[in-house]
Length: 287
Length: 142
Image (cartoon, rainbow over all chains, first blue to last red; front, side, top):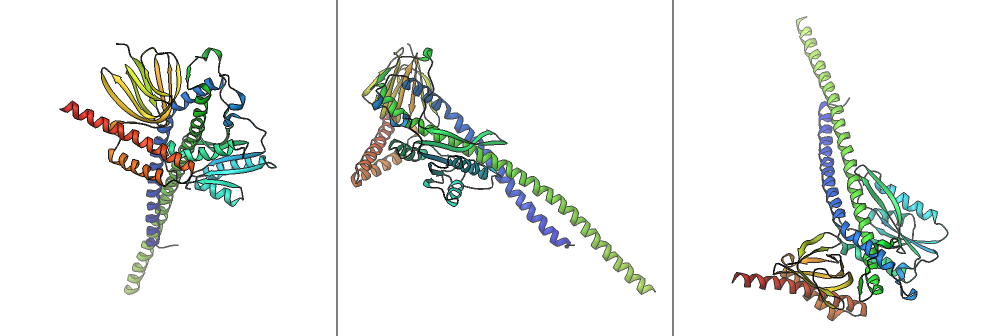
């Protein structure tokens, strides 16, 4: 049995770990709230954009002048944007999103697939498994703004417009609730506008014309969708980390309790041995 | 006096939401003045300053492009970025503009140049809005 001193040291070390994990869990909780708020704040913009896009797409256009981002092609080359955290300590989140993305790629075996990785965990995984990684974006931070997203959207849109890829998907983990994150793979390109009901037709005056407004709007829409996915991914990361770290804290505290019990037993034992020694010694002297 | 609802939103936040009497926005084809009960309109915006008038008081907001939608008695600006005059740090804006100017001079490819010019134009707008705020403040004080 280890000595009382050894156990004491062990307890102190576990207590320190518990302090760290507790702090991490609290930080993750506050970051998660901030990200949720950011997602909420961006909603008016994205809702409006979607609505305008539906309206614009319903306008008559000359086919050949239509933006390439709307063009649907036979899918021969497919691209997946994998959005993952930069860091670990998120429980099973990182592996579950990587697994989902990998499964999606396996499902499309036979056609050419490429990957754009956002976040270190995904890029490492994709490089390790020998995927064709076209671009890597890392260190977006906990609070990216839309300008950080723009390069991703530009690269992907350009490839699509140049017909280097025929479809682009977004793989990220959807923030369902604090305790539940769901890895999803959703189509990004070509852009498929929502259908517009006749009663929603307003008959805007378009300036310069509906065609040009549409061409200007599409890149924003793509950006917005990626931005939204990144926010979802960050909220998921933080909530997963919060839960993982809370569990770690609970486990550490449990361990401290167990170790304290062991320590008390050890102390009692050593006292008993000492007493026995003294009593035994005294008896020997008396005899 | 009649007024209408104006909302300026970006991808990150709602920048402005108030009843205004007049809105002047930098449309791609030229400045647009919007008064209450305008007919439905959808237009693209270029980098420039948005001017809103509220009870004879004018406010300026710098935008770097976006869209303006007018429908019913409500105008919505979906801006790429939008900043109030007092949010802009003048010194930093000036620095950014100098940097952009340098980039315009040093850029080699056409695409580089285009981007640099766009960046320069944006910083010019921000600077102009920031300065306008200062001058209007100083006149109101005197």
